[in-house]
Length: 140
Image 1 (cartoon, rainbow, N blue to C red):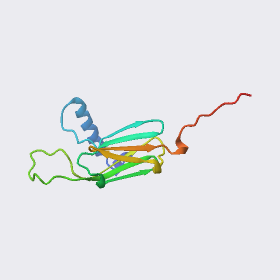
Image 2 (tube, rainbow, N blue to C red):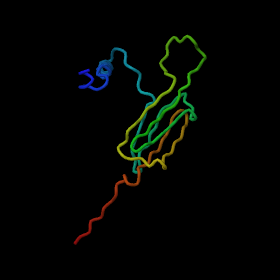
Image 3 (cartoon, helix red, strand yellow):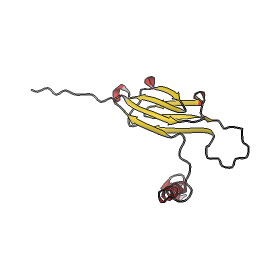
Image 4 (spheres, rainbow, N blue to C red):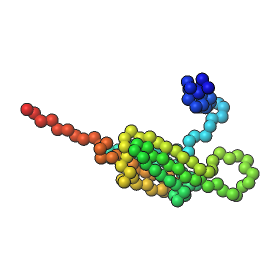
């Protein structure tokens, strides 16, 4: 109970994650699978462009939501029923959810999404109130 009050809900989860990261840096041990989907995000003048690798996910199985300064991608990654007894299985299947926080509010009406070759591309424009404004200084 005291550990929960001091460290949050599960201090052992954080310690296990740190242990895995140290093993990864040392190049040994087993490391947990990376979060799915993998994101790349880059900023431009109008907002952020986010790409996510979603191999094996159909566009109709995706749900994308934007609320204030966060975008959430959830969906279903279907497995194949070809093999019943796997020798090795590293590609997870089933439901997934991933949320990314941004540094600004997003205009939800301007969000555009496209899927091509298993890569989702989201264009997340800044809300008008969040865009930088140029202020002119008058002499006098």
